Amino acid sequence: MPLAVGDGIDVPGEAWSFAGPVADHFDAHVARSVPQYAAGHHIITALSPHFLSPGGTLYDVGCSTGALLAALDTTHRCRDVQLVGVDAEPDMVRAARRRFTDRADVTIVQADVRTLEWRPADVIVAHYCVQFVPVADRPALLAAMYAALRPGGALLWFEKTLAPTPWLQDVLGQAYVDHKLSSGYGPGEVLAKARSLRGVLVPLTSADNRRMLRRAGFRQVATVHQHLTFEGVLAVKDPA
Image (tube, rainbow, N blue to C red; front, side, top):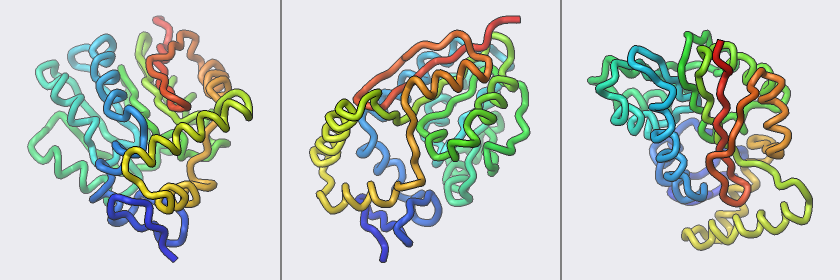
């Protein structure tokens, strides 16, 4: 039986998917669901010019409908850069391509990021997408991102995380439920969304994520956003 998770989205088969009609409602849904989601966009667009030089390349992996990519395009339109959005879902790719039908400097690629053939990049953005990649595949993905970055390039990585202790996880988890209820979701919708994400969105602790970054090669890592268990980090590849 489909699960009604709000914003006109019904999840078939009780397992969350980005396919089908989700693309039509995704932007509104994620903005309501993820605390300070728009703030993440603002931080990414503000930090990216420090690393994306004229003639450079930026990847937005898990670009969904291209909303963040559109903000980045506005920021960098006069800088002669290439923006590449990557998503595995055909419906998301179609939605993103509709945004950029007249933009020769923006490319939307349909691909699984785990098997992507990377071009040399100055910036890689992963805004709440790696959490959907199987845990066993994340170290190799981060290593591939590190290898693709030019010296001095940056990864902007936003994730839902687990708190470091069970008690803190309980407190922050309840605060997140309160956020969703105050955003207008009904208790049944909140429960349905949580059920649909079981085994689909698998968060790790911030410490786990930072260990993976270090093993991938990143030595310069800073927190650039934190709200409840939602965290954004800036990881920079050392200059040659």
